[in-house]
Image 1 (cartoon, rainbow, N blue to C red):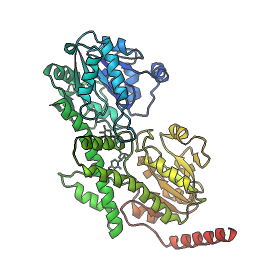
Image 2: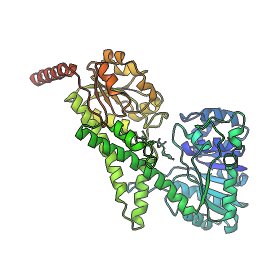
Image 3: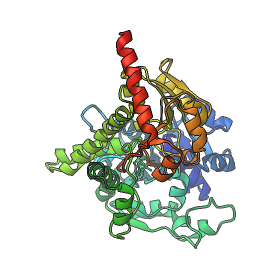
Image 4: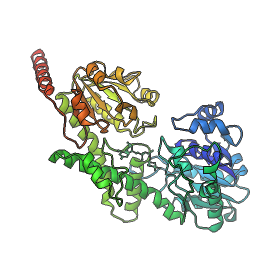
Length: 477
Ligand code: UDX
């Protein structure tokens, strides 16, 4: 099939590269000249497993890049809109980029096309795209608008695309739904799985994807409701973790106990510093807005957001509890990205926690396996935040180690070395990466989420030295 994907952000780039991998002829459209030049030179602008391989495999063959939307529209049967839908101040999604792409498509249309919303958009966007197309002179018989939400997680987006739990085709006409379904045929009939050189997925037995046909409005809601449900699971376990801390229970045991109930499931029940990223925070606000505008009270969404925000404050309180005063403290931070496997810092809990600590007078040396360049841009020439070239360097002489992203590499650190490098043997783990018993054995004072603190005998000495230091500071003042 001939496919255009408009917008080469996380979603567009992955979708474009994967459609090329499925054997289609794809053109990726973007108005960012710099990004286009990067892609044409063979660079991959984001850190995403298997994406560089796919771009390399298909660039210049079945995958092209262009800034010319009209030309791409004329060359394609399916046009996926994958542009940004950032939140406005009131939480509503800003759909102006979607609208301007729809105008561009309307002006270029010359044959029957299916326009597909791939960006996460509120319910009714489908009908708005249709109206905008008609207002801009596109003949009604020359197009249909479908909704085909993505469920890609950053870091595993390529495997998520090629081995999806489900593909949702939301369309209000059979002609449109059939054409869109055809684009996914190699996944639905299992032929992609058997192809030599296929990207490996999480499954080893023959894989055939499930394709759900729904109305366009249902598809739009499926996307918002899925993300809201996952975010709710995270906030739920974070709230349970707070209760565990209050009563002296262990959230990891509680999680195992509830997650083994097949009706609940283990996934998305990891407590931590709260969810971040480009989707959950934005989609929760947008879904809440959609519900409100349509007269539905959905207080569960408000509570999900509240618990998430509170989780960052709880972490800051733990740092204070571990270190007593914060002004002048030197902190070694492990992890900057909003989660592991990505270099994305959008709505990263790590970034907001570091900013709060710096406001309190701390200095930070941070390390992240993927997000260092982006972090340097984010923090700018802020002298209170420095970057290390490895995890051990970040901890040298620090008053405490803070773990803020769940990178597996951190869990394998040599704890004896960690202890030796730190000024005080204190680790505050916002992601429960370590086993408390091992931290205790290593002589580290360990504070995590929803589990009892590990404060060994050494802590008495440490507390005494902290008090002595505070007394010295008071005297000096
Ligand atoms: C999410 C959805 O999973 C995906 O289906 C959708 O299309 C886009 O949004 P993504 O933002 O890439 O994907 O990340 P995800 O893996 O869902 O994690 C989101 C956030 O929740 C991260 O900050 C992560 O650290 C946090 N998280 C996740 C937890 O705190 N606990 C968990 O158990 C799972």
